[in-house]
Image 1 (cartoon, rainbow, N blue to C red):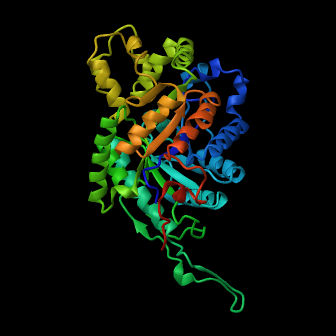
Image 2 (image 1 turned 180 degrees about the vertical axis):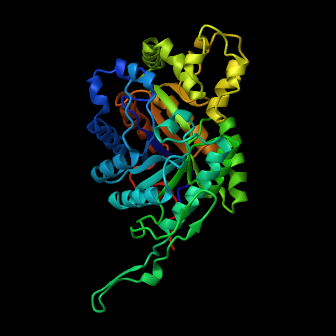
Image 3 (image 1 turned 90 degrees about the vertical axis):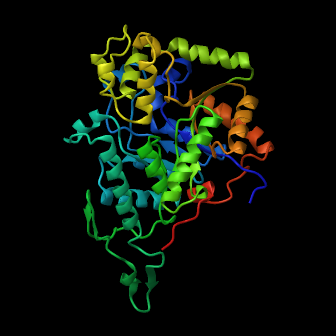
Amino acid sequence: MPSRREAHFTLFLTPSGYHESAWLVQDDDPCEAISVESLHRAAATAERGKLDAVFFPDWPMLSHFRAEYFPQVRYDPITLMSALGAANRKIGWIASASTTYNEPFDLARRLATADFVTNGRAGWNVVTTYHAEAAKNFGRTHPAHGDRYARAAEFVEVTRRLWDSWEDDAIVGDRSRGRWADIDRIRPARFEGAHFSVEGALPVPRAPQGHPVLAQAGSSPAGIDLAGRIAELVFTPQSSPDAGLGFRQKLDAAARRYGRTADDIRILPGLAFVLGSTEEEAQRLRAELEESASPELRWKNLALNAGLDHQRIDPGKPLDPRLAEEAEKTTFAQHIISAALSSDRPFIDLAQEITGLPGGLEFTGTPEQLADLIEDWVLSGASDGFTLQPTTIPTALDAFVDHVVPILQRRELFRTEYSGTTLREHLGLAAVRV
């Protein structure tokens, strides 16, 4: 065991970078940002920096208005994880997939396949899809917040049962007896629940990690309860070490309710950042991003993040309290609604302040200062590291790998080499065996 806590990092990978103006301030071909090759280069940089994993977000929908302002592409995350995982040999992969708009048998097979393709480096970010517009793409009615989380809990239970349908030593490969597998060690799922009925065994043998790593990103009471029940890695918006410690206490309590401990979970809050060789340079780069941002995009996007139809909002006026009642009940949405109702400013003005991940952490400064921040959070127990959201890719990602990582390594806060081969080993989690 290390003599002191070491940080863990995942890379939240989006075209051009996390800031909506990223494609406007970098010199590369703006159309290149959506190429799979650009994602491969970013993942290779993350692997060079010895990061734990690449994290693919997902929305099963297109926010039409956004496409005018910045790159919009949502390739299937599991396909990307498999394709890029075959090219990058050490870093882990976490793909978001919805429990509201998928089925357990299909998703369990795709994720187990990805774990084989990547030789045990696959993870699944369990999401419930909070945007109601997604339902129209599947011919469904969008379930209420609590119902989505109840379905998610059962979905994961079925998926785990499918992954466990093959025991570790079910394949015997005995030529002398002509016996490839011991079928007594292959068990049908035979699951009947409130949401799902699944009979058979998975047609894929037990995955290299047993189970791909389970991540979860909800921070509402229902989200924290689900994380305590199933998550091994949690992505969350937290704005300060005190907030991070408070979140950890809630998550630890939820984990104990399900017979788990804090050691079973890695908490990696979102961290968006701009880096410069000096504070002045960092501030200049941040200003360049902000000056390039569209005020119209900002207020429409804020409405979207609150689960509201922007066409019903007058951006020149404060948010109508009656409309606010229709917002989603997620942590992100309610953070926006609370800020809007406590202010008498026009919605378009509020949108210039609430950018990025609502309630999350944004940093502007030097590599040394960012290393100080990471050290403070990790050593205090406020987090186990961060989900990195570089405002620009490749620029800010390169700066983190080339300048922040070496500082953390000198402080013995981060690995100098991968010590294992699987995502579970990167995160210090045990393989799941049956």
